[in-house]
Length: 245
Ligand SMILES: [Zn+2]
Image (cartoon, rainbow, N blue to C red; front, side, top):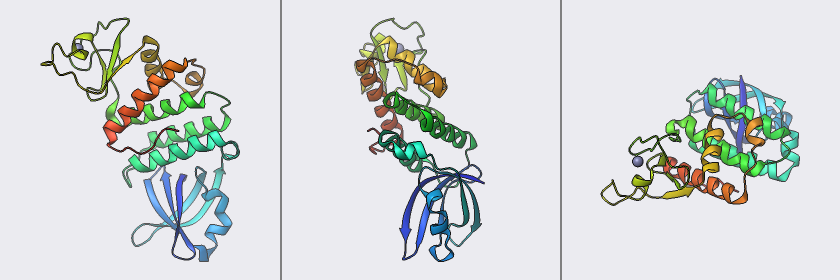
């Protein structure tokens, strides 16, 4: 089966535990035995974020890795510091939020596409990574409402002065954002965002990497978008893991 290597760590004297995101089994830990030369023979293919073809056999508590052949080891990602950092953060986030042993082939394919895109991408990585995080949060069942007020469902939103509420799960109309309809207590934190940021967030959720990478954002808009996505992620996963570079 296919697997993406998320991380590897030494285990006892000669073995390693490899965390894999597989298409068929979801996230699993597999023991790679040094004594069987699995590690030395397959070492480059076991380096995150390699995409490999693996054979596994069930062991006592987890899985035993018997073979791992790299489909691609993403050499461009490895040789470029910015790409390598983005890929490492992506693997760390996936490893952290994925429940063990729950297959999710849609997410597996999305993650694979992201790494393949990263491998050939030439620019715009800083804006692409927040998009990866937003897609991930959306896929996990917390898709933000970007077309109507997330509190009162009003869909005639102002052209300017738009608000995004992390806890409400999307945009807010002016009345909800200023607290005039919610017993004076607007849901915090609230971000004041521009129309361009709303358009970008919509595109981030549904757009292909090719389209997203061609989007031009001002420094200020990129700052807003990063703050919104970072807070939205942390709110839903209650993990202040350092997801941004
Ligand atoms: Zn409202």
